[in-house]
Amino acid sequence: MKHRAAAFTLLEMIVVLAIAALVIGIGAGAVQKLTEEHELLRVAHDAERVLMQAMTRTLNTVQPQSVDLSSLSQKTKLTVRHAGSETFVSSTDQHLRLRPGGLCEPLTLRWQQGTAWVSATLDPLTAGFIDLEESL
View 1 (tube, rainbow, N blue to C red):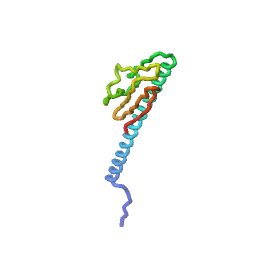
View 2 (tube, one colour):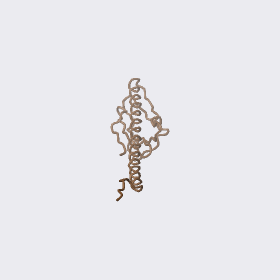
View 3 (cartoon, rainbow, N blue to C red):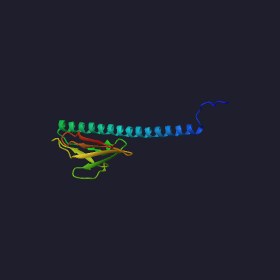
View 4 (spheres, helix red, strand yellow):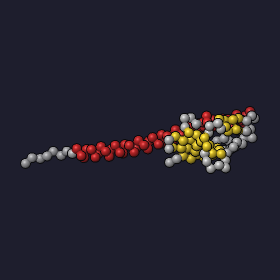
């Protein structure tokens, strides 16, 4: 009587490799999306720093400052929603004017890269962000 050695068949090995490839593919997609969102958050925080510095210069010099909004995009798609509007429009050729009284136009800025996006509402008194929202 011959005993067969316990071993995996070729079909079992192919099924295991297919499942492993599927799990790795799903994980890689999730990591890519997290990386895009992290990059967008970094861009948004950099823009907030630039805007707050411009507001500080405005208050210190008592001179209005203008910030080119397209310069805040950093290789992402930046769109702007003005107060009272429902739609986002391109930031190309748009400027934010900061006044010595500490008031600027209320805006919502949205940075987008692929399907991920980060949206930030500008505080008209400080030029900082009062609301930050990101895609899930």
